[in-house]
Image 1 (cartoon, helix red, strand yellow):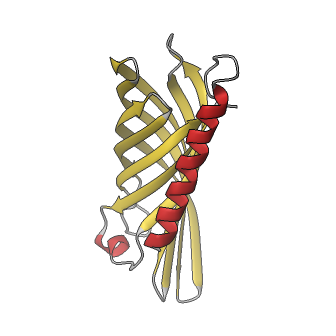
Image 2 (image 1 turned 45 degrees about the vertical axis):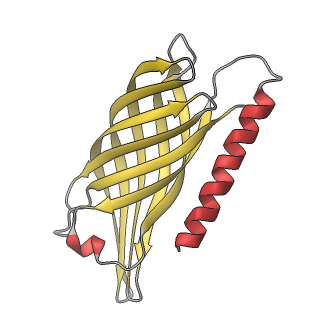
Length: 179
């Protein structure tokens, strides 16, 4: 599973860097989309006990930008899952995030963000599959580098479901795609 994560991360970062390289020949306009790899560490011991790491991928759609062309709000969708021999769990959040950005240098910025989301939670154990929708709130801190690559660390707080706390920490690595 770790090998798949590394391969996926390398592919996503290469696509992001290549899109930035080709964008230099186009007009300077802000990126509308982004891609990311997400790692998740749940608060709940029952979800931590699944033998595979919580890893997923996602996409962002940027809605608003500041005067320097950096995104200030976006909608994101991604999928996270983990499983062992008898149990599988997954989370598919659709979130809205608002960012407050501070330029560190012309090629680097830091930001913090907050937002809300709706999550599709799924648990499958012993052949029985259960699914529900639950709301969430999140907060994050990120750094973005001049070529559109970013890294974010945050927490996602979700409603409990089936006596399980589906909240946790996340780490995202991604890139804005110039099109």
